[in-house]
Image 1: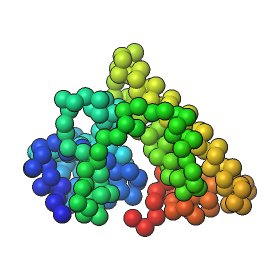
Image 2: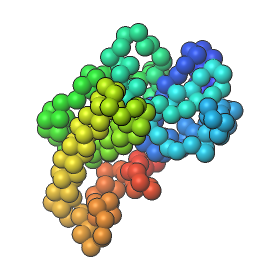
Image 3: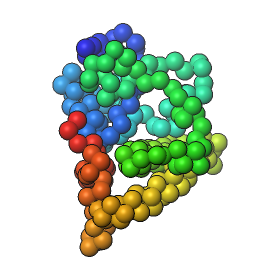
Image 4: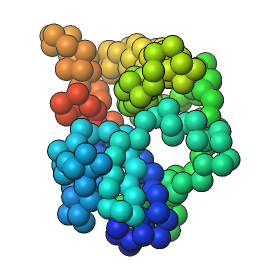
Length: 212
C-alpha cells in the first residue's frame, strides 16, 4: 500500500474522502505520522474532524469543502485524484472515489424511497447527517450573496430535509423494534439502542461505525 506521502508525490494534489469520524481520526493520525502539516502550520491531529481533506506534494494539507468537491464533479477540467480512505485502509485494488450521479444532483424523493431495509435506513441517515454538516460548513467558504454561497445554502437545505425525513423514519423503525429509549432526554440517546444494533455508536457529535 502506498503511503500518503507517496500518493502526494505521484499525483501532486490528492483529495480524500473520510466517510465517518473514526476514519477521519485515523487519516489525521497517519498524516501526522508521515510529517504533513496544515497550511497554517498546525499538526493534523490539531485539526477538526472533517469528511473531506486535500493534501499536496509539498507536505501540506487542509480542509476541503463539500461545495468544492461537488462543483468539481460537474467540471471536467478539475481532475484531481480522489481517494476513498476506507478502501485505502483495506488496501483494495481500486482505492479511488468514483464520481457518481448522486454527487452531481440529489433527488430527495428517490433517495428516501429507495431504502428497503433497516440497515440501509441507518446508513442513509448517517450519510445525510454528514452531508448536511459538510454543506453547512461550506457556507462559510463563500461571500454572502454570491452564487456559490446561495448554492451552498441550497445544498444545506436539501440535505437538512433529507436528514429530517430519515430521522422520522429511524424513530418509527426504532419504536417498531422496541429499541426507542424514550426515557432519555435527547434524540441521539433515544435512538442509540437501534443505531447500535446496525453497527453505529454515538461519539461526541457524530455517529461512527463500530470496529473500523
